Image (cartoon, rainbow, N blue to C red; front, side, top):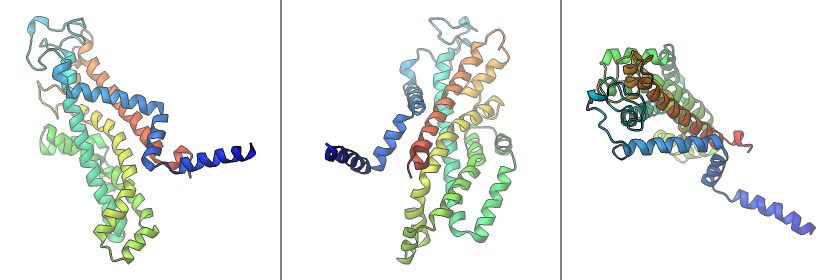
Length: 299
């Protein structure tokens, strides 16, 4: 009995040690109930956005003045706006634009920030000082104010909104990547690669970059919610999408003037933004906990 008892924990330890990193990640991620809920919510949002023509019955742009400012009914679940357009339809189609612009903005910021942080941390010295002082200059202005300034300079459009939001978030990625590179470049396998004659590009791309991917992924996931909010804020101010484009921030702006008598015009687009940001933040928290051994109780 004693041998069986002693063998069982050992067997469990071996089984646990034989798990791949992907299996460990999936196990830890599934244990986080908030992350699972966020994943389900975000998956539903993505499916609704992708299959918008199949989950809606009305045209998102064509007006129908016979049902102007209709409250939520069985026919129009979220009511209608000043032009008789179905709010539910416009919210679903608006998700296509808001989520796409948010994802592209995050991609711009993460790619630029990762490249600059990688170069800064790897080379150090004058390069590090120049890059970090530039990051400090960008961080000196609030993100949304910097984005507004960039859009004003480039001109109001969704493309310029993506560039502005991405550029304003770039310093966050640069700082995180730089900190990771400073520690990773001192590891033995990096020194071995240098001793084997690998060039700087190979060392950074093949040996260091994979080690900074996890924190960038977590930061990008959490940053998607902020990017969606920033895009909506710029469109709300009239700097993003132009009417009659169904975009969440623009839909809220349209309902601002009639909020007291027709609350549904602005409320449901606002709820869509809230649910999206909540889902993305829950996923980001789950990714952070699952990818960081210190947060899941491992050494």
